[in-house]
Length: 321
Image: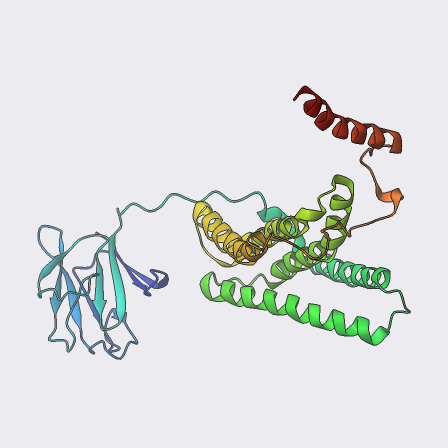
């Protein structure tokens, strides 16, 4: 019977894998004449032997090692103990999982449809186009917000700061992917970060447009945090998908848990703000030109009629009394 031995880390990620066909015994240790050679200094040169019995089972025999053999619960096990398929042995600080060739494996994960999108975004020309678009939109946005002549040095300072954040965020997730999935996918992370940055660029303008047309000025902060949460959770989901080997449900729970926890931390103080007496009236300052209004508004005559009806009701109730 073939035997597979996996060396794993504490997070149960496979470091290396060995397969032995039709072997009656397998020697494990730090010495170079072993079948499985471990580099961990707490492992003895000749630590143990996995021996197959006449019944076809495997037993672990300790070769007078310094630290002995422990199970997955870190408890010492006696020499000659039977090892079943799927058992994990701890030698020093090295974890070894033993499998026979008939051991069932996990079903394949379905490939997400967004994988093709990431493959397209990872093309250097697409990333370069997104970078140029981001710089152009930042220039246009800064110029629209300035009432004076735009200073090139000020624009360059803003761009440099934002690009450092974008490239730093992408590099961090790329490094995580390189460590955990052996695939950095830096260009995909950079493309996702650029798209999210462009969404954050024009978010204030979008909010002003929404609050102006639907009279939502008093909810400006809450709406802003909600849209920020959607953008950040979408970007974080892409980063998790590209860098971390997670199940879909686990990824969704982690992303939304982190995102909306941060949103609530920033949103709770405004929600519990003092709503008592104010020395100044609350008003909506998100005023825009009439050309951007796409929702039908009330005419002056309709507003006057509604006002007359509003004041007429108290008078009628007073007359009844």
